[in-house]
Image (cartoon, rainbow, N blue to C red; front, side, top):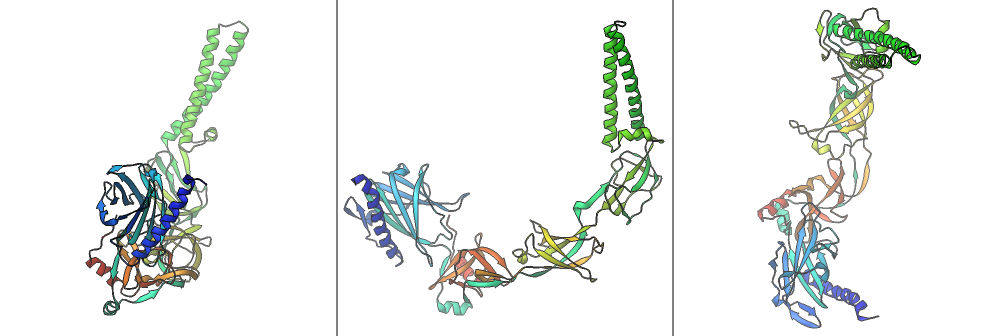
Length: 500
């Protein structure tokens, strides 16, 4: 094995020794002011090292003519280490050096970051978790020399003794397994299924001759709702019938002239003229048929009609007539909404969901719907939850689809909905009272010795008392439960800021 192949192994061993020593020092809350720096077998004092701000706005560490700038970048991405290298204050390629950083946090195992070159910087291989409160140990190999530095930064952390806890009334609990029971009662109202509402408009303007159906009546698909006399429709039908006759005549003339031309009796020009007239007649017929189809008329039935001015308006679906804006003798336009027909075979129960319950209600859950005034009861499934809160009531809406074949559910009925959810065993849960908002995080304040530090959480289901923790806190960790706002208040007094 040659010297070149041994270099990576030697670097790993040296980095391990350096980081191990730095971690031990950092756990004592400070770095030694006389830390040794290994470079080509020469010991160099860290007295030459000064923490400064680099060109990229990060912390820069320098020994001799070599510098490294440490930044945490989080614009549009999850927080990540980006490191920049310099020689004599000028940038050098990131691939020229090998770097490792170890972070030590309260209540967490040490986290080792490796780096690879990307563009003009070295990118860390892991996310720098919030909060950015840690002790960092840096080790670098460059041109056969090994450098090491360390620094500490504190964020969202505050010291509170037992006496302070007693005086502020802060209670300490331990995160761990719990049973979540997400079952809630929600008020609501029955409404029509909006997908089953059809607004009926005339196919053509005219005068209403008959209106045989009434508001509130149930009709079948195809039922005649009204009879109208329309001069426009009569003109379109007449045009179609005339176009049919012209096409018949044009076909007859074309066949005759074609035969005469083939027998050399007439000139070719006369044959071509009749052919053109036939084509024009075909176009005219198709155009008049298209106009009839555009207003819902079937052209092929026109020849069977005895009265070209009259047409019947039929119900497009089976359902309930919920609006009627038409009367005998009325002149109506083609865009007037004269009837609304609703298919009531299914109905919606729109339930009011308060913000505290949004973590429980899910699309697909079953719900038992009961009328507040009668004994009517049904079961349905939540098919939709509104994405935005109502501006006035600050509530969301969960929609349950109900079968209404019996016709018992009616639009406007007040109901109560019981959202059904099984009891769920979760490995880690915390008290809902412990949750606080800090910066743009939902946090609890973890307890580590005499220190509290914010722990941003990813939350799951809750039952109003306990909430599932998906990430951010482990079973066995202590946190501020009762009166946890006092911790946040003390952090505010200390002027804590979020480090970017």
